[in-house]
Amino acid sequence: MYTPKMKLTKEQQEILEGKQGEVKAKIMETIVRYGDIFDAPELVAVTHPCCHLVTSFGMPLLKPVYRIMDQMINEGIKVPGGFTMDPRPLDYKNVKCSPLERLVFDLVMYGKQKDYEEQLTKLGLVDKDSFTCACYFKENANIPKKGDVISWAESSAVNYANSVLGARCNRNSGMIDIFGAAIGFVPKFGLVTDEGRKATWKVTLKLTKMPEAQILGSAIGMKVLEEVPYVVGLDKWIGTELNDQALDFLKDFGAATASNGAVGLYHIDKLTPEAKEQGEKLLAKDYKEYVIDDAELERVYKNYPVMWKDKTKEGNLAFIGCPHLSLSQLNEWTEKITKALKDNNKKKVQIRTIICTAPKVKEVFMKTENYEKLMQTGAKLTCICPLMYSNNPLTKKRRIVTSSNKLRTYTLARYYKTDELINIISGRKEVK
Image (tube, rainbow, N blue to C red; front, top):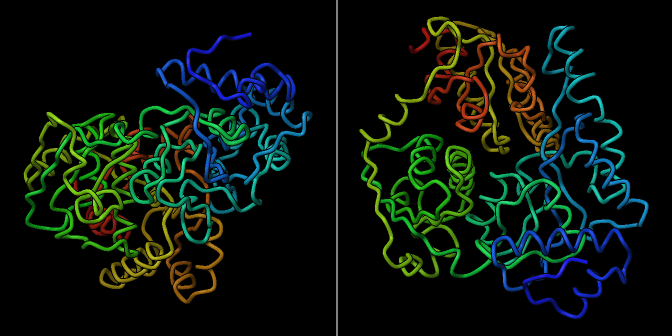
């Protein structure tokens, strides 16, 4: 039996010794070893029981995952508060592909999807519509409170929960997420601690116009990497209240800090919960500084590489919504696309356009007039993860354009600012 470095309670020690079964003992040992690696002194209880899992795709290669989940199912182990999942990888109705691409998806990449989802249901999946990277939308209702300790994975979801909601979670990997939630404990280190939530960077904005959330997040992520930034000056542009506009901005901003760097937590002066309470007292001793002006954001944007084989060609597939779009963003994109088409004397989008949102957000949106307006443009609405679609090697020949820095980072997609992407979709000359 593993001898932990950290101090365990009597209950935790008994679980580790196998008094609640061999499978729970293995889960506890994994969590304890994980904490010992980071010198965690103890485990702390998970206080928001609903988990969020990152591994939402049924890849045949993940045999160890399926085997472990079968062991948990056979022992009757479930996540007490249930869990939500990252998006599904496929939607052939709305995101069509060639027969050869579909063959690769079905046989090589995601051939275990149906079986895997059956396992997830037995382990506590909230429902069949709980597949989204933005589980914190009010439509999904997986919203921890400030100070809640959670056991989540998915870089953008953890980033949002820590920063915007004030919950506490480290950047966990797949399986660590469900283990912590199932056992009810996570190691006390890093972003779970008060000290680990101190900001080691002060980022001062000196901008003359509203920044693109994705580019601002990218600039900060690439600068601070895995550290915690405290951002000053953003309230000038998005205010001091967490309304829909601010939440949408922070969702996309945070996803870019997490993917272009490895930021698990940021503080926004006068806006995010801990910054509102403590202000610059959140700054750690000997913090570093980074000043961002208009020129710096443009420098960052202009230095994004174009990974296409022929860089002179135009895009032929647009993905919007990585992370998934909120209801207010769906309405905003619908208005932007329809107006641009009208201004350009066009009725339909000029390249294949895929818009991604959460299943429960889609359900609400489909009852609005804007849904019909969007469908009339020829755009498609889906709930998949565009990253998983783009992981098919055969899709590399598609020249994907996007306004998502996360998608740009992990695929060959080319990033465009929002207005530039709208021009491409509506048939105006593509910005080179």
